[in-house]
Amino acid sequence: MILAFAVLLGVVIVWSVVAARVESLHVILPLTLILVGFVVGAESSTAIFEHLTDPRLERTVEVVLALLLFLDATEVRTIHRWDARVLLRLVLVGVPLSLFTATVLTGWLYPELRVALLFMIACVVVPTDMAPAASVVKDRRLPKRIRDLLNTESGYNDGVVAPFFLVSVAFLTGGVEGPEKGAEALADMLPAFAWAVGFGLLVGAGSAYLARIANRRGWTTTRWQAMGTLATPLLAYTLTIAVDGNGFVLMIQLVSMTVLLSAVVHGISAPLIARRLARGRGGERALPAPGAGHASTV
Image (cartoon, rainbow, N blue to C red; front, side):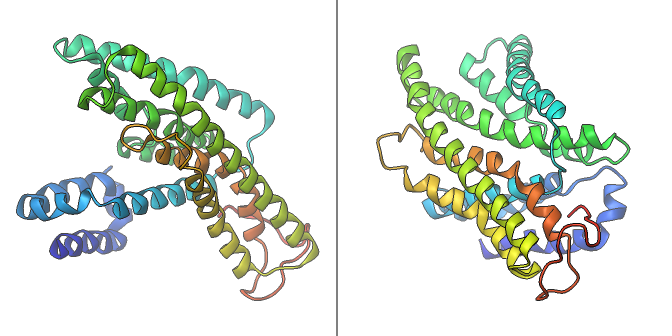
């Protein structure tokens, strides 16, 4: 187990040295880590699988995902009103149509598979932030507006697709039997979504508003505002987990996965914080008032 982690961390260090040259060949780190994991896992698969079922590992993965989604959001400038409408069409129309199309095509290629398995495969391949699409989303040859929209949408579709993916897994593993039970599971999922969205909006908008006020009045410093930005997704995650004890527990801990949507929703306000963080010159010096200097993308 220790050897496996040592090898993976070694790959990351090597990648940090040659990233530009390797990525120019359209080779990306996530797929490289998957291949290395196959090789390492062949030697120590038993020990690794024993740890994969640990609830503490599940919480760690969720926290890391929340932070990564929030970090992605800081790369996006404020979404304009027109772009917001396009984003809604991407999420509410484009994602469902993509799921339907992927399910139908997969069923045509593999007619012997169950519908739940076909839908699960669609949930895996549709999100645009999967490893093969990352280079496209961040390719500077594309217009920045398109990249920002795809980057933002890629975070939202995580929160939308993940619960349906888990429902599909529950059908396959016997956790849900029959369409009536499946409908009940989806109905129980909606309140959990509401909690995630509510806490996401409250924490994200609140932290962004406080950051703007503090920056305007010179109450804080660059270093501590960065700490506040890091604490924002963690607070949203913690509050969402805190309400996971009121009967919304579905198969495969469905409710706990809705924290991904929480991280995405409050992440839309991250560009407001990021632009403030880009201002100022010293680590402990007070941040300048708006208009002094210029903002840059974090």
